[in-house]
Image (cartoon, rainbow, N blue to C red; front, side, top):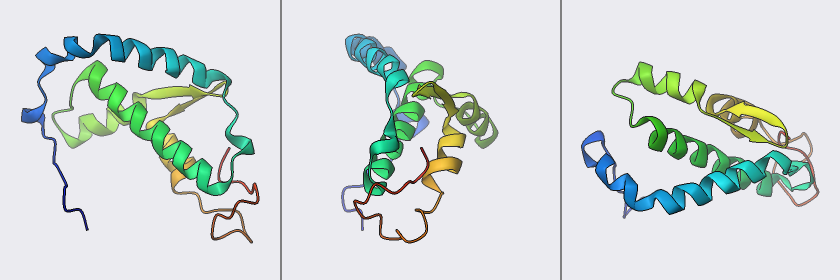
Length: 122
C-alpha cells in the first residue's frame, strides 16, 4: 500500500525550473559516462535487480529531462525505445533493460535471489 503516493502529471512538470538543476544534471551525466566501465556480473541476483531498476529509472528520468514528458502513449513508447544508456560497453534502451533484466526470472535453482552470485541478466 502506498500511503504517500504522489502522481506527477504533465501539468506538474515546470520546464522553466530545470535550469535550477543544471549542476545536478551535469553530475548525472558524469556518473552516466562512468557506467561504461561498470561490470554488474559479479553482483548477486538481488543486487542486480536493484542495479537494473536504478538504471532503468535513471534512464527514464534522463529522457524526460532531455525531451520533456511525452504527450501520448505512442510517443512515450517511442521515447522509451530511443532512450539508452551504456553499461559496461553495452548500449541498452529502457525497453531492452526491462525485457532483458527486469522481466527475466532468476537463474534456475536460485528462485529467491540468494547471495550466491547467480545471474539475473548481465
